[in-house]
Amino acid sequence: MGGPDEQLQGPGGGDSAGGTYQQLTLNLFLSEAEQIQNIDEAENVKASSAFSFAQKDIDHVLRLGGNTDRLRERVTAEFEKQKPVPEIAAALQSLYHGGNGFTTDAGRITVWYGEDGIHLSYGKSARYDKSAQVISWEGAAERIGELLESGQFASNVELAEAEGYERSLLANKLWNLYHDLSDEAREAGYLPSLSEIKGNGFPEESAWLTEQLRDPAFRQPLTEEYAAFWTAYTQDRNLLRFHYHKPKEIWENLKDLSLSHKAFSSEMAEVPAVKQFITEDVDLCQYFRQKKLKDYAAFLSSSSSFCCGVR
Image (cartoon, rainbow, N blue to C red; front, side, top):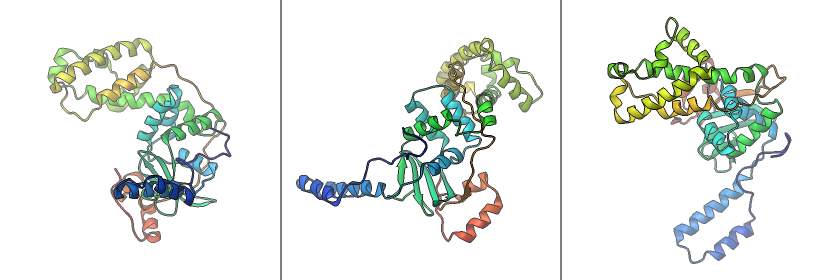
């Protein structure tokens, strides 16, 4: 991918009206439904290039959007593991979700994070806009990688804290899982390393575990213990009292701690910011959980309608 002034492009370029006509000419023997589908696909390809967003505005979307707490630290942690782009892209898809709105020099940009990539449009909605520019998740991963290399994705503090924050998230998952072990699991002696947790209640105990996860001498036996527990749990779900935990995710997180990590640096004390607004794609129930009530009043005064259903 090119330099900071180049643009991440949506899928494919526009086609001329002649191209659409030629496609229909070659497909005379298709069913009516298939011909209609081909017309729609051709029109969608043409529409996808209707908007062109400046690279600096796309970078704002990558840095400031996503609706995940401490997003830049979590994204940075994924890149520090030096995994292949497709794997990083899959992680980004889980970190960026919902919708965002940004007011830039180019006007209002509406963003929706979908399964196929990041949808960008001008106006109040991007989720169902067929003319939206779509940046694939792999394209987003490549651009974020460039921003990290140039020190333009996250602040110096965020970069310094990324790995530690990831360990703290894993420590919280392990703490919760261990405290949900059933009496049967405790009697069987599963996860003995976690029985050594020190502290007075959750915050202190999780902080202790976060620090211990730095040490290979602690991490290696814990990983083996967890593998044994997970295998047993697949055969007997009574080993846990509650089943909201994600055993596979915890297993992957544990293995990732042992990967060789790459350090990134930046001279930025804070990332560039732009004014944000609530789009019509945003579920207000989700918004209440993530934003302040005063912004909701501003949304009602500036928008006449909205749609719900964001996961």
